[in-house]
Image 1 (tube, rainbow, N blue to C red):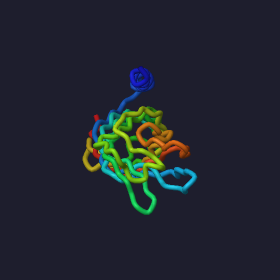
Image 2: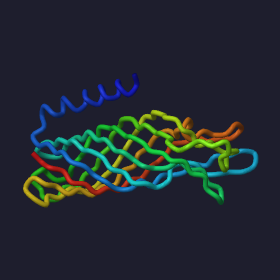
Image 3: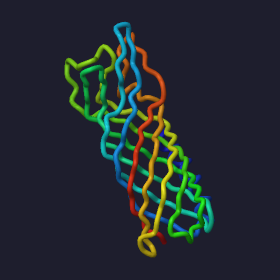
Image 4: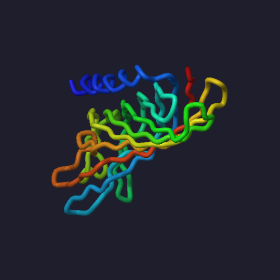
Length: 212
């Protein structure tokens, strides 16, 4: 139910804005995620748990007014393995799906060829462990990397620049931060271990959109 409700809320934000929109964009972007690791502690010491670096790509549907406001509905797929490290490193195949709606602010009007922008949005992110579980896993006294799935709320600030390379084609370069509570079911702290905080996944991207 939660994913369905989030999609309905996202649509409810997009539709009213679309009524006043005069320009639309559709396209995609690709880049790489650089995941932050958080400390996981037990009586024996401290390890780091989080996401490995990995490729990311996705879809963009955007709208903007004549002047300085716009919005974007976005989906991003990230192929980032799960990991725990302490000198050595244990990894497990993983991926995630992010869906969010962003409010976008442009200092320059839509008629400008170069348009810097700042954005902030919210939605949800689905983390999945897709590796093969084994009877023994390195560093399992700190955290277990599991073949499971977990939904988390998502906050995503970002910024970048768009510039027209043709009358209806825009190239964009941007940097995003995907922020979620740590997925403790997919990367599960071992009994007696402590892990808390928010996970940051920093994602620079390059994309192309078509304006109409």
